[in-house]
Amino acid sequence: MDLGVLRRWWPVAAVALLLAVAALAAGHSTIGASRIPPISDTIPYVPEYPTAEPAPSIPVEPRDVGQPTSGGIPGWILTAAMVVLGLAMLVAVGYLVWTVVSGALRRTTRAVPAQRARRTAEGTAREVVAALDAGLVELDDRSTDPRTAVIACWVRLEEAAEEAGVPRLAGDTSTDLVSRLLRGDPAAGVPAIASADVLDGFARVYREARYATHAVDERMRDQARAALQRLRGELTSLAAVGEVPS
Image (spheres, rainbow, N blue to C red):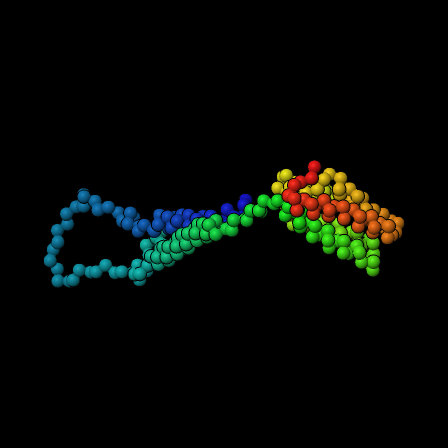
């Protein structure tokens, strides 16, 4: 059973149970007047003779004074039951009103998610160029390890892809995210900003730097720099002219 439904309707069930208890108590609280035998119409006439002695009074036994009739329920129990029933009904009604009002407020005050602004090829190209410039500065630093510098450059491109709104899919390889950034992702509203093969050179260098077991030398640093400069040149011309290369 759904816990939300249970929490919402338990006050109503409690009120129904209390109503049943009150009805049962009322059904068993009738005074036992039916036990009084009916007066017969055939009582023989008995003449009364005057006498000097006073008529004896009918004694009242102590057990008959202030005692409830057999089979009845004391009045204070019924009063207490009605008080409890009234309080339970007030609590149930208050809870239901609070649930309805709070739900309505949540629906009306719920923030509408802001729609992502439609991206343009020029704006995306400028963002990727900024990431490439940072990567080229890192590659030019000869004090850093070439493998680390190449991987860091690719990570910058992945961050740029995420900022552009390119979703990371479950079956993506290590280069799919950046490839969709450059070649476009119509489902995500990301336009194409680079030709089909401009990323291949740098992607090859990145895969080798990430997965190769041999040492990454300065030659690979130079290859990565050349690939990034080629990609930057194409993106720079796109940002300036506003045309997607074929």
